[in-house]
Image (cartoon, rainbow, N blue to C red; front, side):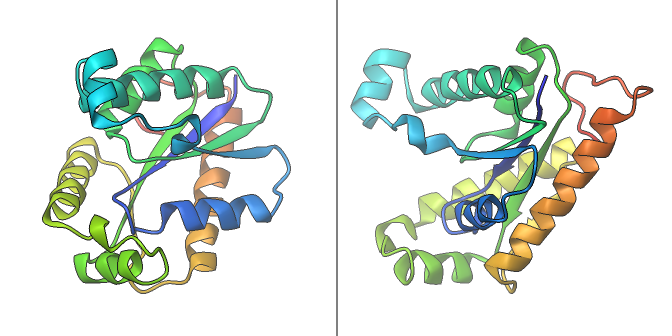
Length: 187
């Protein structure tokens, strides 16, 4: 069973850029995936097909975790805006593979600058995205998840932080004395 590192955070926090930089390093046994690569339906389709955006997100998270847990890689990395609580529930349904969820966070002003500048998506720099970032930080705090502040670091430094998380996950996954437990993060 593949170990899974889920990198979550609000738009503009740097998770996608860091996961892309990590993938470019070509680490042996590591595969990187992007949540949105399966396509994101319109809000109307989310409502019609799943009962709402939250239910779509939970379903998509479940599908991703099942796919990644059964994959051939030693460690799979998933970049995506999903609730950590959805990840934990999906991990439990997938047989509790060794896993770690990390939150990429940064100051709202920096997130807005990135979205308006390099990303070219100024419409995402909104009070709604700010509220989403606050919500994710609250989940991370409540669940005791690591929070990686990307406000003042380079993409390469963020990728190095992810590489350190992968090494921590690998040590945990190969320690035969450790037993993954539902809704518990790898130490």
